[in-house]
Image (cartoon, rainbow, N blue to C red; front, side):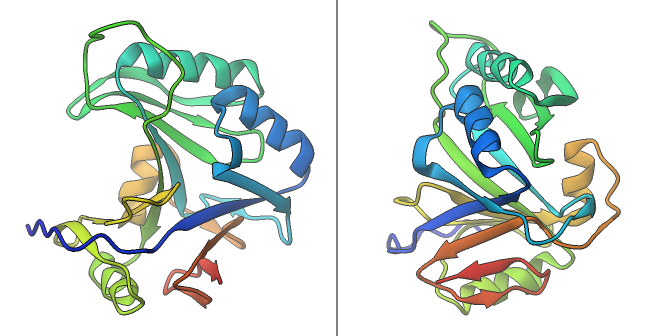
Length: 209
């Protein structure tokens, strides 16, 4: 395990989901999560099949806040993949958006310590990759700084000022975490933009400038 703290980079990333109905899906997401401009939507170029190789994560302060967001999601066309429960790392659930994107709603706390809300502390793009060490090196060579690294199991990048954070772990582990089969093909249905692009990473995730 390495845990490296470096000078905060200037890199910021944004996420666009490719969906069949950008206007309708955007409205459902705003009603569910209230993320505003942190997430954008564009017309789908292709139809992915099965697991798309990534998951979005909403990190919140406590279980009550997680429950509020889960309930709002289910009222707005999301489906439940894994019900909310306590786990080794805290508390959380997994839902799937009307466009097929999988969302993990999680907190490191197992008990409420005050009034709950619907406030999201951070939004994280979790990439499921075939080779974590190789993907980490690929991104480091393109200017990203590693903040946490657990060998071939998990990597987190230092993006303190970015509206979306970035982390990665093995594809099979990501699918298990999401409660779905790791099988999938076709488009990822997501485009990432940032000042490190444009490029396509080893797992086919597209970054734009």
